[in-house]
Length: 256
Image (cartoon, rainbow, N blue to C red; front, side, top):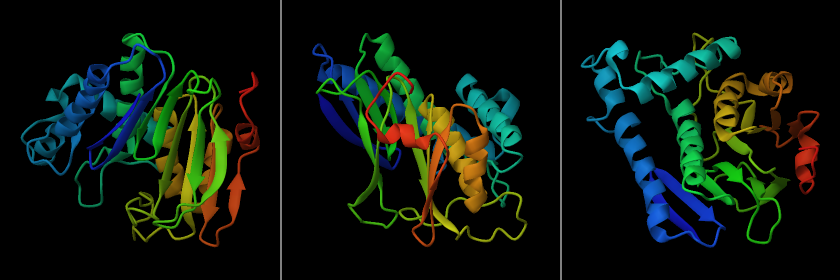
């Protein structure tokens, strides 16, 4: 069963292969994403993040969920040598570079707790898989040509039994990731797409954001992180990949 909803400003698709899945089960997961949107959206004035940005709530008084996301963000800042920062130049906090992967991972864990073993959760192109697809094969995911509106797939990858993939880029949303170590905040123009595969979608998502902020050098950050592989496309449509990425272009084997 596969269903899609527009939540958090993007399409969220969930497919569950297990035969005992019901629409009510899927709605429970979609409801979780709606709760995340209400809590973390910077576009909703009533969200906890908006209230923190207005000074109505101190960070130390925030909810357990917000504190968890902030802790992950701080960890990512340290692990990326400062290339990840959820505080914007105007001083506002925007946790988008963490929240999507965090929410997808939590939604996948919710499906596991509900007793399902074979599924994928896709939120705006960032994906967590578990088990196998309806054909009893590994989940295949296409990396799109980084041109807005292009349907062309430039690379197909096959994820293992419990892995995640995330892509950061400027070809759909425009310039929304900046180098926090660059005081001029110039647009990142040397790359247009950076995809990371990791042990779960949260790891892939947080490092995709940090690495993209580094521009073409970001692929080396991914290369150095154990358990991560990356694929970057530069402004001249030339791709570079980490040394272990090639294994994901072949159907699943135990070396994943």
